[in-house]
Image (cartoon, rainbow, N blue to C red):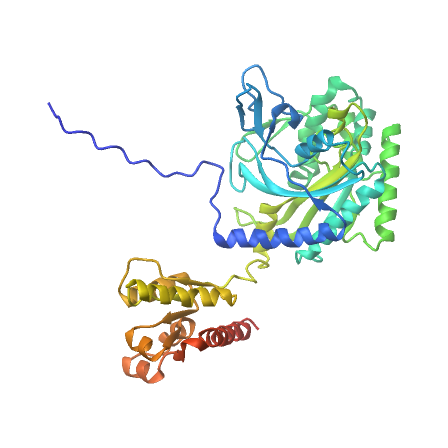
Length: 494
């Protein structure tokens, strides 16, 4: 019998599906984007608010807990009071709860913005994650379409602030218009809610499948290239013809008060944005815009990037939507029992970052790696001196770190600094200390010269970018050398 103890199994490090680790470059890129978006929102007079990652599940609206466990699209758990809680699905439903709960203290109209992570308990796929960031702006308590028009203008200004001038369009429609079309073809009432949603989803595929593809989805269904079949809305030929006529702008006017009201609101929005100087190239009335969420009740809008990118098949396609929103007059009212008008939009920060990467508009303000102070002697007095050099640089606003690794070999420390992308290394051994000097090694210049110099003799003769200065001149010389490197980068970029 084998008495040897089994070796404990090593835990496997694995990232949950649909989630990603974020690099320093990505974090800084998002921070820079969010700062620019925030600046526009602040300019419009909006103020920040923050809601928690978790909400009671019933507050999320369409995701109500069933008898066992809510699992349609949300990550959920029970708290110690045996109540279902869910990670927020978007930033709008939590805002509605916040407004209702604090209604007596909030000044209406309430103009606010929020940035944060949202979570979807859905099957992940290429470019489809279970956690992603949104940045929302909302006006609660303003019933007029001027609030919707302002949202469209703010969305356009945000795109331009991010460097996307002439590369986007904000498209605007009205759910009342399309609901009027559906009423006109016999899909009014709660009994037809499911079919109406199927029709909306079909229309939402117009850019992807064209009119013929939408026609199939409005009818019996559509089979894709892989053979997968998507069941359609089951509309009859006359019903399909009416919807396609509306999408094609073929002078289709259903006899519906709702349709007329929606068209009037679109006319008012167009008048307001044109008066403010926004032409069709920036804000465009477009009947094909169908926002998918059921809580929209009036104008809906979408920010679409118009430049082409390569898809996974190598085909050139328009990048598409990076955000959208609309009027949702019923969402806050669920908590209040009284009408509370609201409108807002949401930017998909992660998707927008992908777009800006495609255009080369990220990383332009790359953060410089720290200056590395090497550790030549390891007695406590020497370590204190190296730490003093490091703190002196930091207090002067220069990013710096003292080498904290175990490598005593000086060459290994320089390799570490090189891998970090450090611009300079600070060196002081016994000889320099005795004279009150420090050596500053230009690692960027050294790397460049190493590609130009072929033999050691030439290397020594070139005396690779290393200078000796008195300790008291450390900050001044480091600044001078960093500035010279910056000028080299600017010349190379220009």
